[in-house]
Length: 308
Image (cartoon, one colour):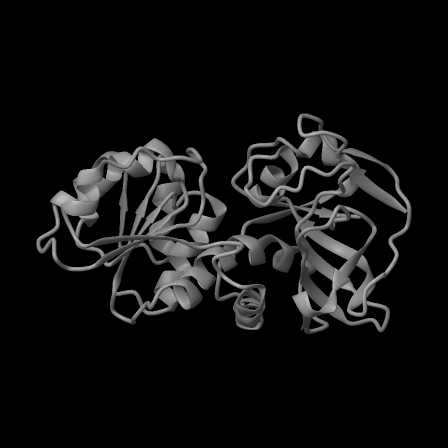
């Protein structure tokens, strides 16, 4: 079969022949890959910047995808701790980390949406106690995951959703997806009285935004839950100690490890249903897997999806 292979952290993927996968465990299934998204998680695991990167090479990247099993059923599968990912014609999945999909789904759309969508979906459902009527600020709302977070927060009953980002053009699109107000990072204090921050940026931008938000709150004793989901601006953030004393702030993380695989999988059928029904707007572009070397570092507002 053909697959994309990475041989070192600083190497780009190379498309070529690769040995066929073999099922070894009781729950393993050898499947045909129909579509696999190029996510930030995929890139960061491949270059070693993500905390879950294994450092084992050669590596076939790809953390999830839409696959077809030997009985002909479509599945969405999430992969973890494996050197044979979904950027291949065939791979091995753990059936317990997959869900069966309807036959009429669009594999490219599902593959594009599930990873960025589940980040905020699972955070609001499984990591914190989110209540209908609460107010949400999305930091990094112009990326794929942030863009979906705006829609998901509204879907879960947020009374107000503030969207903060740097790309003015993409910010302008978010009002049509449910954002009540779009803000630059310099203006985030206007969202001071939110109940939840979904943070996809971290780094200095998050630290710089934290104090203005906290000190501008009408009631500093009102709880604010800051959910750290992504780290597009940096893996560390220089948070001043006063941020933890100036208001009732709780910082939590949401991701692999802080949420169990079982809890992630439990949320996927409803998310897939929302994507299939068109309830969540998805920007996706299919790319032949053979073109992975050219597409690997491409900057685009669409979620690239590789198809064998």
